[in-house]
Length: 462
Ligand code: SAM
Image: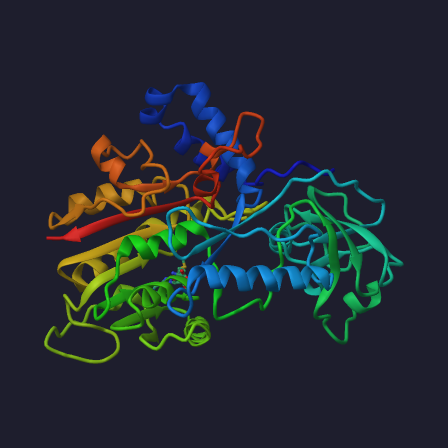
């Protein structure tokens, strides 16, 4: 059974999310029909990629238009060599209001004829293919019994993780991703002695068309979702400041902060997972940024119990930082494209308490007069607006601040916040940019709205 992709959720998670999007406050404001339709559109658009691929340009190294030109040249060169999944020439647009963003429109879903020869890939690999990648061999779960290099195949994503690796066919719940040409025989893909590496299927007719960015201008073009770039600007770091990024890996926002400061000052990046710290350092090196100091540390314990103790690394005395970013670990339900979430409701609900512990540390580490930005890439109330309501109750020294830029929607009803407070929040709600027929609309400003689901709140510590 092949379905037009909709995110596949455990029934308990589906019910939980439905209650979020059909909460009493929202129902009273928009009515049952609109609330239900938004929820259904959310389930569809989460399974599809955002309308644009967003690139953050290293404007600390070169002017935006120079980077745009170089990128166009590189991507067109790549297409001529047949290394990309597209055929038309690449069009890159500067974002109308964000000075370091370039956008590449993603086209699709395109009408592609399904073939009888089928390759099935895991859900994570499937999401990458929908964003313009080829199929890498380790992601392949099933392929035809006699598949040879050069065979033309249809590629499907296994939505529920039920296909066993090495299967010859799979009839479970799956979604069609497009057609490609096998670059390996079946025997090499599933060779028991030597795990296969590299491209297994080169996509030639993908359902969604966008250029493949693998290794293209690494120091000048950084792939980053639009709302994540907005976070750096909303934090508003200035040269010479000391900034803390509490949950930093792989360092996309850390590097943006350092770039916005002209690499002058200090950006302290913490993450609990040791091998992710190397990713932060690698990214900083690639982008020629020297003001970043990365440490492996549990940020819930980042406040020093001896306030007089001054050390270079964590823990830090209270009021050590001019600005703090808490890009919190979260349930990630805004990520796109995402065709399947296998998490239980318990796992999804486990984030709120952790985020509060991190938030408490953030408030303590921030100087008076300093700015705290809280962000997540999820769509629940519990991790977003409810956290803001809790924070304002718990820390009377915090006030909500306007955000610049503010290109998303306002906060969602349901956590008891006032209309003024909701207006100060920024929620990227992709379901609002999809029309009734479950297709992305071509409205002006679509790039700003057809993004991953994301949330940003900005506080001042008085
Ligand atoms: N800010 C990152 C970026 O833009 O590239 C993405 C951060 S991701 C949303 C959340 C990160 O929080 C993960 O890398 C995770 O390892 C880290 N994390 C989770 N719990 C943590 C804790 N207690 N202390 C520090 N980092 C933590």
